Length: 387
Image (cartoon, rainbow, N blue to C red):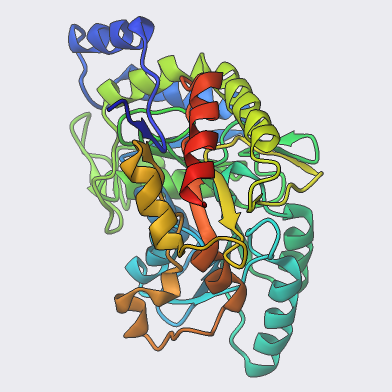
């Protein structure tokens, strides 16, 4: 059976040749390919600084720590995200809370954020960092969220793991117009891939320098950052406790090659999304709402099942699609429902919009190499699955 996964990397001979070039070079890590990839992403986004790391989770962790998040602090994020968006706070010793999602876009809801901030101010437990997640590739309402950040004094870290190639109010996601730092992911199912990999973009030079130090064990060779005098060309100092979160040149060169195709990849994803919109009309399903201020990068295409009109559970529809070779997925199990978060005191019912969405959602296949016939096949399989 020919299967259609929910996501798949698009690798061509140009990408393979780029990686082979690195394998034949003098540097497999800590070489020039990393800077090349950083420049490609940073230039496309329109940010001043970029820093490549081992994966998207490392990007979230380093960015949160560089923003000063630590014990006694709070980070708020969306419950509909991969667990890393919340876990990064716990890596820093901070506490996590969630803001329920907008029922249409399933992005973090600015209205609910405003309500929660008002209550938190009275209780003396405002967040230090808020992480809006651009779910599926569509930007959150960042101008509204930034206005709240300015009012209440928290830092903003955009999780753009799904959204490289998207825009908000005509500006490219990742340019840090609305936030202190933006994190990116280059996992194989993302818009472009470096195998594993992540990056932070920022316009803050001091924040960039702090993240760069943390990326490599907290070590510096810059005399300006050292305590006392340098002892010579061999000398380095560990100025704080950091990590080995470096990206290899092998990964970076693949990522740099992929960036040459970013706009083509996103254009095809938008074509596929438009075709889905057309062919799914009339079925008992609803795509997520589109914010007219945003252009999605279409990492994912999610639908919500009208379970009042379908004689099956979501599990049954999911299993029936997979039996036909349509390898749908579910994004995401709300983070607060995970057993590890239950141990922190989170319970079902705390974020009702997120939980309602989770009960109804299925992610359909979406990747640039899909053909129009593939989309029609998904539609026909879904039609049969909901009968």
